[in-house]
Every structure is written in structure tokens, then in C-alpha cells.
Amino acid sequence: MYFKKMQSRTKQKFVPYIFILPFIISYVAFFLYPAIYSFVLSFFSYKGYGKAKFIGLSNYINLINYDTMWNSLGNTFFYFLLSFIPTMIFAFLLALIVRSKPISRFQSIYKPIIFLPQICAVVASALCFKIIFGERVGVISQLLGKAIPFLSDMQLMKWTVVVLITWRAIGWYFIIYLSGLTTIGDDIMEAANIDGASAVQSTWHITMPMMKPTFMLAFVTNAIGSLKLYTEPNLLLSQNYDPPMQVAPYVNLIINSLSGGQFGMASAAGWILVVVILILTLIQLKFFGGDD
Amino acid sequence: MKTKNITSAIVLHFVLVIACLVAVYPVFIMVFGALKSAQELSSNAAGLPIVPTLDNFSRLINYNSGLIVRTFFNSIFIATTYTALTCIVASLAGFAFAKYKFTGRNVLFMMLLITMMIPPELNITPLYLIFSKLGWLNTYQVQIIPGIANVFSLFLMRQYMITIPDSLIEAARIDGASDFKIFRTLILHMSVPAIGALAILQFLSKWNELLYPKIMLTKQELMPIMVILPTLNELDSARSVPWELVLAGCSLVTVPLIIVFLIFQDKFLSSVTMGAVKG
Image 1 (spheres, chains in turn yellow, red):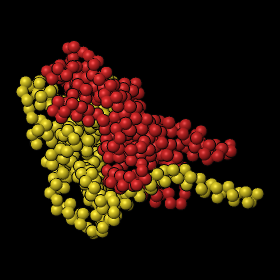
Image 2 (tube, chains in turn red, brown):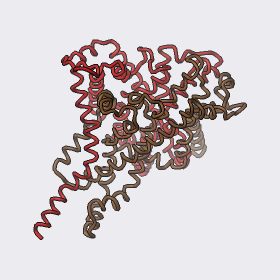
Image 3 (cartoon, chains in turn green, blue):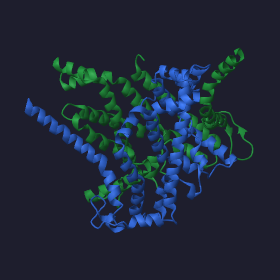
Image 4 (cartoon, one colour):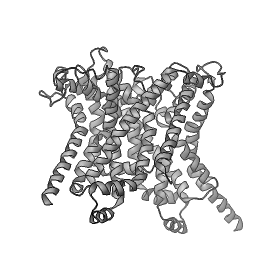
């Protein structure tokens, strides 16, 4: 009896480990081990065959002295910041409008339509925007009756990517903000109304502060997602994943080193991205996080 | 007061209608463009098709001896299997993290959360080297297995399962149910909304994937359709891109999903909100 009890108790102890086992095995094999491997690799020169040669910080130093690195990092930040601002503003305004009194009963019509771009695959939307911004077949060029070099002028090219990203992203954050607004509850807003607060006043003084955690979450996830940008600029701005250096995003640096067989360099470029994401997230937490 | 309310309602509706037009118009260009001939598209890319044709779709089906059909089903197979495995693995682990006290639980969980900051792009380089040594390049498993243990999914499942009352689990245990039986009959049952949300998010993210399969695969017949679509451009020559064919391909991957979305829109929209627990 005692023995049986002991046995079931030790068995009991192992149960949670059995439940997490499939996750942990897969996590270690396909995430943790590769991440450590790439960290080690970033201090080596390795061509994929033969012996890897230890070169210390050379990969990092080379990258930091490499103009293309800063250039592509700058491009990624351009795409991130310039789509971030309109995305967040439009998404929040649309959520406020849909949530407002005269509109809220039509929510179920507007919500899915505004979310629709998210259902469009990234690849399909990028290719479709290529036709919208195209010079010869382009929709805008046809509508205006003259060819505008959206996809060949370096400045305009970058803006087309911003438009594409913003178009896709608004629906996502719109839904997130809408659910954030729903949790605020009507009674608080009504109390503010009775106290004579105007819509703008109550939005600014009540809604915005109460939405802080939602904003925070939206900002951080948007930043992490945006720095990994790859598909949109590569499909929109090039035929063969080789957009001009002036418009290429940071991930292209990793991929070009990888395809060029410079695995150490590709790994170092990856770790620089990790550090950038880390710094950016910390800054955001400090700026918007406040007390928590 | 009343007229003021009506005017403001009209203005707000007007703003929303503009927003909806902006959201829908590119999809409109895609779907109607797919129904235009090359000739019509070059002069009328913006409007409705004047002479609608399904010709592009038959060209698409016959393209490169059925490559599009094949890769379309590759995509569905890969995304579905990946989604199913992710949901299973995340539910099992989520249950343990939500409802058991075990040594190392909190430390482990914190460590997992911290690694959420590491972008998967970092691991493309080492994974490429590992898989080329294992002989996994150009397989289906390379597209399905890695990534099924993702911390976001685990976190989502754990957050949801925490809300399941302990008393239900205790009651089942007193009835003599084993831990695994409790998981299978009680926990999974009660977590259906979370699993559904997770499945939608994971399916969409796998369906959208481009970079990873592009690196891991060179055999076209094993690729997902997303990698093939941009190369439709090079069918004839770089100078004469068959845009009508590209648009047909884009519609092929978009329209079925839009239909599913419209049927299950509440599930899709709540998956966004549930997914927002990440962070």
C-alpha cells in the first residue's frame, strides 16, 4: 500500500514534464540549439565546408564598418517608422469612430471590411501593389493618364512600400484597438458626457490613458514585426529579390551573406538585428511603459 | 441637437465608407484583373472587366505542367499539418504550465518568454547548415517540423487554460481520471476557443511564409505556392511580365481565404484579440 502510494506520487511528479516534453524537445532542437550555433558561428569564418576559422569579432567589426549595413538598417527603420505612424493613427481613429454611438450598431458591417487586407496573403498584396504602382500597366498611372515612376525612382519606391505595409496593417491594429475600447465600458464614457466633457476631451483624458496597455502592446509587437521586414520591399521593388541597395531592407543583408556562403557573417548580421530589436523594445518600454 | 447628431453620423459613415473603399480596392483590382485579357489589362487595369474571361485561370492550371495546382496543395498540406502540430504541442505544454506546480516552472517560463524577442530570421542561417547536413533540404518536413514549438502559442494556450477552474480538474481526478484523460476530455474540450484562435493565426502565418521556404527549397514541386507566384513573372522574359496571370495566381490564394473569412469572421476577429495577449 505504502509502496503503491509512493509510486503514484513519483509518477505524479513526472506528469507535467511529460506534457512539456514535446514542446521542449522541438524548442531546443529547432530554436535554442540553432540560436546558440549561430552565436558561436558569428565569431568564425565559415564557408559551409572545410574547417571554420575563428576570427573573433571580425564579422561584427566588418559589418559595423560596412556602409550597406547602415544603409539597409536605415531603410528598415524608414519602413518601420513611416508605416508605424499612419497605421497607429488611422487604426485608432477608425476604432474610435466604429465604437462611437451613432456607428456602433453598424460595427458588424465595417469590421470585416476594414480587416480584409489582412486576409490577403503578403505575397499576393505585394504583387498586386506592383500593378497599382506600375508604370506601364499601372493603375495609378492609367487613372492619372501619365506614367509616374513609382517603382524606379528611389524616393518614390520607398514610399510605395510604406503604403503597402500601412494598407495591410491598419485592419489588424484596428481590431486590437476596438477590443481595447470595448473593455473601457460605456458607463465611464457616459459619466464623462454627463459631466459635460466633449468627445475630444473625454477621448484625450479618459480613453487614451486607459488604452495605454493596449497601445504599448501594439507598439512593441509592431516594432518587432517591422524590423524583420523582407517580403514587401523585395517583391514590390525587384524582379528577383535584388532590390537596389538604397531601398533594400536589413534582412537582405543576412540573406545575401547566407546565399554568398558567408555563414559567419550572416550569423553576425542576425545577432546585430537581435540587439537592435532588444534596444528598441527597451526604449519603448521605458517611454510608454511608465510604472509597470 | 438632433440635426447635429444626424450630420455627425453622416460624416462618420462617410469616413468609414472611404476607409472601406481603400481597404477593398486593391482586392478588387486583383480579382477583376484576373478576369481581364493581357490586352485589356494594359489599357484598363483600374476598372471592371469589359470582356471578362476565365482564360487566365486555365493558363494558370496548365502552367509548367500543373505546378500551380501542385504547389497550391503543398501550401494547404504544409500549413494544415503545421497548424495541427503546433496546436497539439502548445496545448500539452500550456496545460502543464497553467495547472501544475513543478520544479523550474517559473524560471523556464520566463526564459521562454525572453526568447520571444529573438526573430526567427536569426535562425535561418544555422538551420540551413543543420538541414543541409541532415539531408532535410527539399523535403516537406523541413517546412513543417521546425517552429512547431513556438512560445507565442504556448503563452496563448497557458493564459487561456489558467482560467479553467481547478475544481473541475479536482472533480475529474476524484472520479479516477488519469492526467492524460483529464487533458484529453476536459481541458481540450474547454480550450476550443483558444485552440481555434491559435489555429487561425498559425495557419495564416504559415500560409504567408516566403523567406524560409525560399531558402530551404530548390525543388519547385515541393515549394509552397507563395514562392512560385512571384516567379510567374519570368514566364516569358523579364520584359513582358504576364500580369494577368500573376493576378490570377494572387486571386487563387486570396479568394478562398476571403470566403472562409467571411463565413467565420467572428472567429477570425476574435483570434486577433486573443493573439494580442502576447507581450
